[in-house]
Image (tube, rainbow, N blue to C red; front, side, top):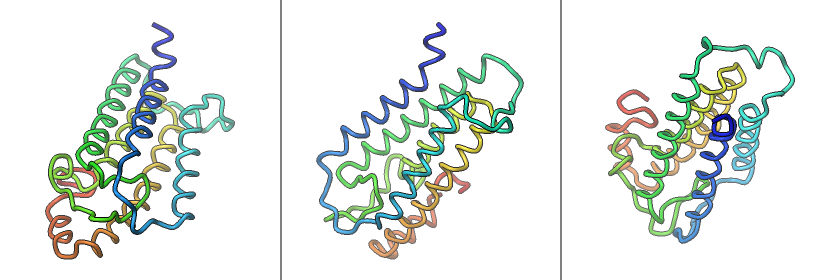
Length: 190
C-alpha cells in the first residue's frame, strides 16, 4: 500500500506523458509555428512547477506550510481529480485528431473543431492538464503545490492567448461566434 501512495502520481503522469509522446506522430504539416522563445518559456515554467510538486525537500520552509487538515482523503481525491483531468485532456487530444500540436501552430488544412470536449470549452487539453495539476497539488497539500498550480495556469494562459489570436485570424467570424458561445477553460465561467 505504501508503494502505491509513494508512486501513484508519478505513474499516472508518466503514463500520460508517454501517451502524449506516442500520439505526436501522424499530425498535419505545420504552416505557422509559435516563436522558440515562447516554447522555451513554457518548458521552463512547466519544469519549475514539476520540481515544486515532485521535490519534497525543496528549500524554503514557507513552501511546506500545510493548507488543509491532515487526512487520507487528500491523497485519494487528489489522485481522482488528477486522473479525471488527464483523461479529459486525452479525450480532447483524440477528438482533435491530426490538427493537434504541442506548440501553438496553424496546420495545413487546419480545421476548427467545436464538438466533443471542444463543445464544452475551447481549450479542453489545457483544462485537463490544469485539472491534473490541481489534483496533484491537492494531494501535496502544501504552499508549493499552490505555487506550482499558479505557474502552470500562467504558462497555459500565455499559450491560450496566442492560440486565440491565431485561431481568430485563421477562422475569423466563425471563431468569434464559437468563442462567444463556448468558454475558454471552465464551462459557462471562464
